[in-house]
Image (cartoon, rainbow, N blue to C red; front, side, top):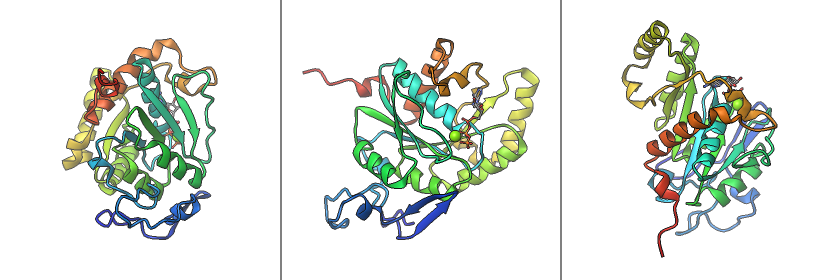
Length: 261
Ligand SMILES: Nc1ncnc2c1ncn2[C@@H]1O[C@H](COP(=O)(O)OP(=O)(O)OP(=O)(O)O)[C@@H](O)[C@H]1O
Ligand SMILES: [Mg+2]
């Protein structure tokens, strides 16, 4: 893959039955020349650098370690945005997971578990300036993370405070050079917090500048992934989390208001 050339080299990435072909613009029905000026092509095959774009609002939750909180925090973001009246779309990419029903939620849920469908979703939605596209990755798929992070304006890598999780998070941050780490389920009790922070500082070294403030253990966050949708008790924490993510993207709630006529 080559950022400078803004192209993904042809080739097929396979992880746990999830295959990813660099030539997806043909599969998605776009047969025009992707190098032609002005051609958008598939964002999975011919990547403009999204961080240079003023309009796209795409957040990817990534990371090699299973169970670090990618799915939970991605839904927390969408729920929090919804509580603020900001539209978002949650995209499931992990073929081992179900797409949750949207009718009990404040945001849309979309199936991106199949690569062509995911390419279509990104092509259609990643440049919309009125919604936040939130893409939930899956553990154990570093190649997929690398591709998704190229589409993202912000890549977030949640991680827990065990030595193993820290080790994997460091490797993720080194591989995905524009990603930010999110210490998740972080201890709040005084001595446990101090011990975790000591370990964190030691493990991260220079990468410490690429960390977001920690998200604590939040009782009830699991209700985000239930059929019924989130319990109202977590609304405030999800709203605060959504504001933090928007701020990290250089956005705020006014970024989504229609300009006065
Ligand atoms: N901040 C939090 N507070 C409380 N529970 C949390 C928090 N973050 C995650 N969890 C819980 O941790 C568990 C694992 O989280 P989750 O499924 O989101 O991880 P994941 O990174 O998506 O895993 P996978 O790699 O398998 O997709 C879930 O039971 C979830 O409810
Ligand atoms: Mg998950």
